[in-house]
Image (tube, rainbow, N blue to C red; front, side, top):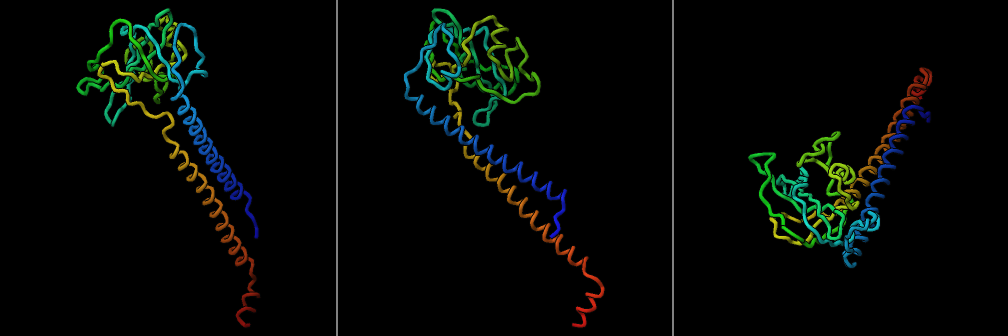
Length: 249
């Protein structure tokens, strides 16, 4: 059976790419499963106190933390395009000035959008004076897709995303390198029904099977095409004398 070079190379490339993508989705699922195991362990660990001393992100992410200080509503940022139960809204992110010095950002919760005014902010409460905050340490207050700077331009209260080092330069405040995702109730009308960080493991396994199915389909198509080509070559290679001899037989 004669093998055609370029079609074979193309099929091999498709198979290699789809198999690799399947393994990538499998690895992503394994990473999320390992992260979920860590989170379950962290849930039962004692809460870590946040003070003026810097805490490296890799030692505190997903740990339960607690902080005491005063909110700074004049530095609030509203993260746009954060839906909850299919309703548009914002995440309310606000600096907390820690007792004893230092600052940490707190993702206080979700606030519905004013449907009559896209830039309007619905009323909510901010505790005055010293407040105790409990929550989970996260690397960022939530990351949404944006093109370029999108709605994340500095000095705007409504933004698409918030980068901690950039916000520190903007405000001149020395923040901890993480955000507290608040979990305790401070009677502020904000929703704190946070999405699970490992959401989508089943989807990764589904994509894995889809990619591997495409690889199997490419192999099957290649074998079918090769068989058809071989039959055509055999038919084209048969001489007229052979045809006549076959008819007289």
